[in-house]
Length: 240
Ligand code: GLN
Image (cartoon, rainbow, N blue to C red; front, side, top):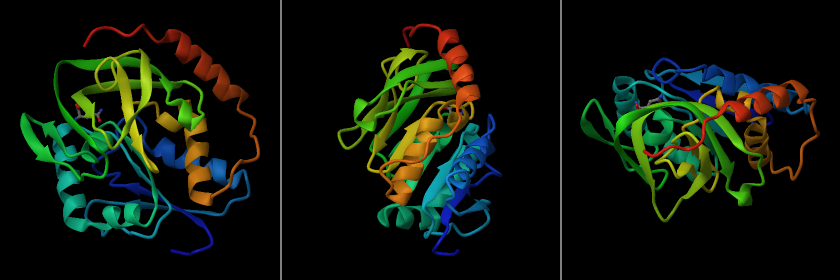
């Protein structure tokens, strides 16, 4: 890994890649390159050592079996823990979000998570499937979240993390809040892929990892059209 370029790792694409998670990697790399920031991307499969020296780590969604296996391997590897301790940023989606917490359920069994985010997940009575929308924690200064959710888990956010958003459509964590964040770790139930529908989150990750206060604006008019369409399509929040 070179030290000059922004290093982005996509964690375990062989296990966690539902609903176009590769798109998050492509969008981050593209939005960095468009600002003249040199980028190196790495796809680290589950039989490889997890490098601890990258700047941004992406971990995606998945079914219960691959999710449990990914958690076991990341716990045994330790590289992601070292990277977070060094100050790396993390974007985690759905299964990847749940497994960053203390525990989650997969195929009816309680599984140990990585403990990197103060959340824990159990199962809901129904699957949460459909459009997801929320107002993001104002401290992050981002426009509303839009995404697509499909998960059986429900997530409780502990004292050492904050919800990423207040739900205005869909379920998210529990029908009230959606996702979580602490330090430079973000978690969300939003697929889509999330960064295609929320490029402001990509720019937040780029700012965190480069230390830049602001980034040159890009032409996001197509994205804005998509966002407006999806935000309008989201159904109102319904009971869990
Ligand atoms: N297996 C998890 C659940 O159903 C996560 C699903 C996903 O990543 N879409 O809750």
